Image (cartoon, rainbow, N blue to C red; front, side):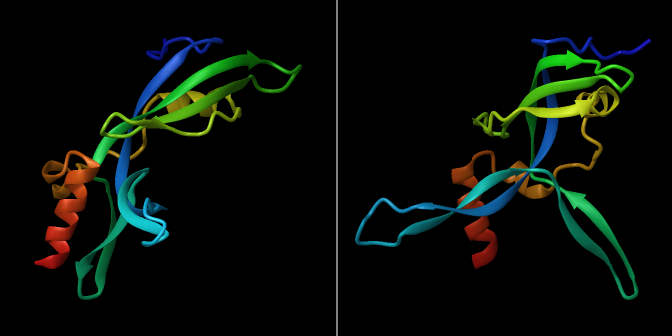
Length: 149
């Protein structure tokens, strides 16, 4: 018996997903000033960090906060003898609650879709910066403090 809810047209799945801080640029407001401004922004996913010392190294996947991906099922179809396909759209909700993403139609076979809605595959603890910075504005300040001294 599966613990996942049924995958049917119209179903909406909100799946927890890790996010990292990333440097991004946006257009500047002043026509006389810089044409783009560098800011910190949330990016879905994890960041590989190399750890260890001497000749022993290993990679750890880190992230700064938990957001979610929002999957909306548009339709479920079984084309003849082939595996069942799930047609869906995906949006993201960052740790600050802002939603973003393209509304393009995506397709997965049912087994792959159930793996997605079952949860993200990384279970690392958020790094220290997530506890210090809870918004993009605070992250810009925290990052400046960490890099300046």
